[in-house]
Length: 311
Ligand code: SF4
Image 1 (cartoon, rainbow, N blue to C red):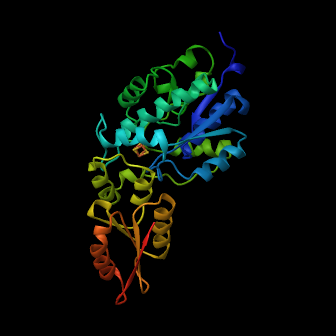
Image 2: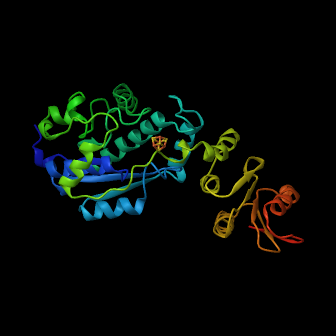
Image 3: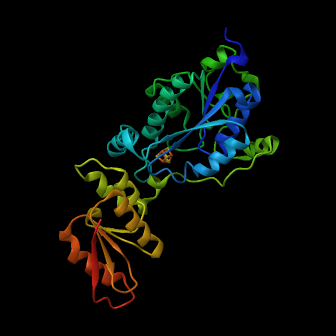
């Protein structure tokens, strides 16, 4: 049997209170040298997954090595967009494919854990806390689909869940784990005081849980072409028309963001009004007249001329 000192845990650290506590509980049992953390940067992850700098600050303060899985570009983005386009386990109230999203993250975590030679995968999930992805039955489904049956330790709810391999092997002391269930956060707050940690306000989920935001994403998902980093970044800014063939800034900051994105990715054209007003990105020249009309509509000034710049 492996001794406790040799066990290494990889904690999925979203940055919220629950994952911070899971990390602290592991640190308490295994010591900071045997605990590492993994933070997923998802394409629409703001909200659920808090701010990466805040997560980094927390890990640094706790002397924990932190790894990032950046799913906003490359192969990870392609894989994520596949599940977002056709989730096998349905969606939540908006476009959020929470169950598939969790399976996706666990599959990637499994690979990373292997590379890091981690014995235990740990999350801050609490049974019954989130309606779609944290029911006991769903937790079981997710770990089985990710090929991690009995291998995910959830320290906050461990005592009301089946014993994991790590507990059976004696790598983790089950008696020091918690039995939290449901949405009440009283016990978590007590634990946070005990560990002396701060935490951000609870977030409702990522941008994919917001119906208004999803109006910009839904047309993108219907496009036949592969979506890239530029599409994702542009979806988060401005007013969208013609299934995002035209994007208009809502303020000066968004105008600058749109211009920066178009230039960085060398896509389409920029239309800048002759007087203060929204800047527009157009994917094709044929959208020029329509974009100028839209700029006039959303501008407080009478615009008589425009500059068209190719990116
Ligand atoms: S809210 Fe759902 S879809 Fe969004 S990041 Fe969390 S699990 Fe994934």
